[in-house]
Image 1 (cartoon, rainbow, N blue to C red):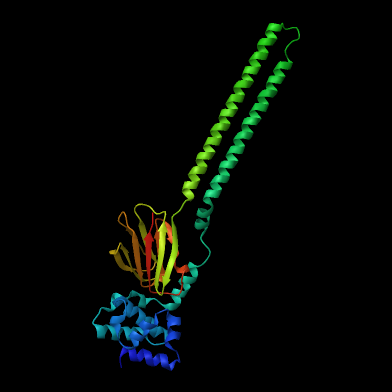
Image 2 (cartoon, rainbow, N blue to C red; image 1 turned 60 degrees about the horizontal axis):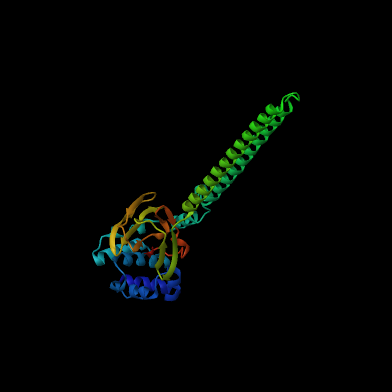
Length: 307
């Protein structure tokens, strides 16, 4: 019996329609029909043939490995093309749950870092003003104490000179205080500008979702874009720039790979075989692509880079 007929019979035995199966697997109905008719040429590519057959088999409680072996014999393709089939579905669900937990302490600290810097600067300014004011009060108290000890019998000339000297010292201290305050204010403004620059980030915005294809817009990125790919479980992935493939491969659990895209890249494309176990970081910023649809396993991500 053919692969398509085996899957179709299993679906019928479970009382599922093609619409039900499309809802459960997120595979488009036209691809499901093509699989049941053994018309694998209608699917996007060899990788998707194996991935969709595996998902279909799991949805109707069939042994996906056995069907994939049959498919490999039928098509004459190497079975290792799809590393996703070694990933246990329960493991994928657990990894997805862990990825949706609250952000780490480091991420929380990074988020509030600009606010912390501003608070520290304000405290420093207030402390400087308080210190300068306190010093001025002590100086004035010392001057008043010194003046009160002046003998009444001193001549007018001596009293005038001391008063002039005291006034000059007070004036110099006042100028020094103003300069210190001015310097502290300039430092505060400079630090505030620096914190604003630090807090400005690139932005990734979702613009379109079409079945398993997700389109985004990237703004505020660097001239050279650096991509870091990681995996929580075995996962196949590929990345292209302006339609030219830059890297493709399989990452095991805990492994990562960094790709630096050419200058002037306007379009970035990711093909993910196990998106639920895949992590993507762009210029040091984590890209949470699962928030648009956390249930799709095989997906294509297109990012249009804007100035």
